[in-house]
Image 1 (cartoon, helix red, strand yellow):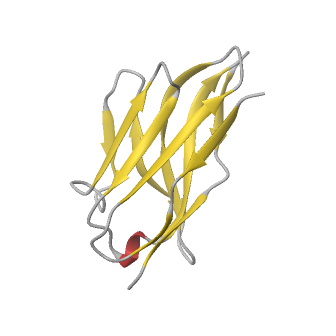
Image 2 (spheres, rainbow, N blue to C red; image 1 turned 180 degrees about the horizontal axis):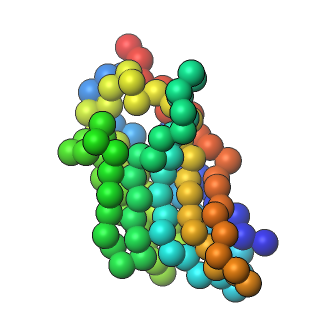
Image 3 (spheres, rainbow, N blue to C red; image 1 turned 90 degrees about the horizontal axis):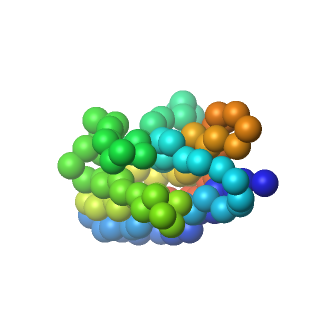
Amino acid sequence: QVQLVETGGGLVQPGGSLRLSCAASGSDFSLNAMGWYRLAPGKERELVALIQDGGSTNYAGSVKGRFTISRDNAKKTVWLQMNSLKPEDTAVYYCYAQILTWRWEDYWGQGTQVTVSS
């Protein structure tokens, strides 16, 4: 069974930085796109950043220039480096991956809370 396990998150002051990581575990699977979504109270789920297995990336306009997504295909891990954090970045962040077992499916992590507050 494939799982996405997230680490990182927490409370940080405005202007601070956090790093999220997400590792895919299990056996007999392949990864395509990996990324991060977030869900804030009263808002719809938002794509934060996505990275393809070849390394191409795309970001939400609100985080461009502040967040950086990266991955290690051998380690089956994706990271999100978040700098210059703002209170509006407060949300639960979910790791996402397109995974091939016997078919392509979307997988999600358990979510990690990021709170930006003074």
